[in-house]
Image (cartoon, rainbow, N blue to C red; front, side, top):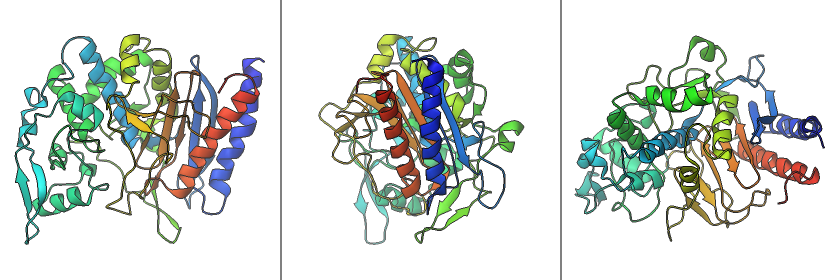
Length: 401
């Protein structure tokens, strides 16, 4: 079957999936989704609008707040430095960012609501940050982190400041997996080693080699014009646009954990780089290392919300064993959508989802801009999208899973 015939069949199927995600009762305002193989995009689609109440349609060049899909790009820069011998994964972070030595372990709160703290017994290493085992949390996924921030007046991470990641350790470093501000600290390590802001380092080491232009921590005028509005779904199901809600422009800190804006086609270039064993950016051995479980016997799992306006409780594919790599989630079992075991994925707070299937040479991205995380319609749309990709490619004889 010709590549054009494959693309045509995918378009017929996946356009309907996107239309359903927007058009069904309780659907999302708008979506952009894409699929790539190792050669280039084989599907690009958009449906809905950039903002409810306005007529501007969602288009494939719409710009999104990437939130935590930023993490893999930050992790890639760090792994370049590891390749070059400029850092070691087992290095203590304080060697590069001394401020991390100020962070204490939380042992609870006293009767007045003040935190009880102790010194960590273990040095936080870069490896722990990359694997989310350092002890950090997120204010919207941890009641303890949120309570600590309130008590100590630590600003929200959405302020894009260094102070915002100077929270507290929820457990002894290395003890378990817990999703948090770790990759923001990795970004500070990168800055210390390179002597430049993280955005400059990414531009030189990732964006230029991959011809990624429509991406950055600060929006260009063109990107601002094409930006999708973030919306919030209330508990009664209604969706409200929040046109003024965006990450600080010209931020104090380039947030390696969540700060990038981009059009989705730019991210597909990054996904293709991973599918092509790091071509132009990483050594194949490094890509292999980044694709393996780094947790050993530990597992990555779900999350509980401490801020229902930003996140729902949830887990990706409950019952499927999941681990963590540098810096992706790895599904250790096959997933009902058709994705085989041992592949990579992650997501962003405003309900953006991607996966990278190195075995079959395909990757996908499903992007919306809706809070709270794991929105019922956005997540369902992503599951339907991924499932339709695998079932269609299997029917066309393009994959064996």
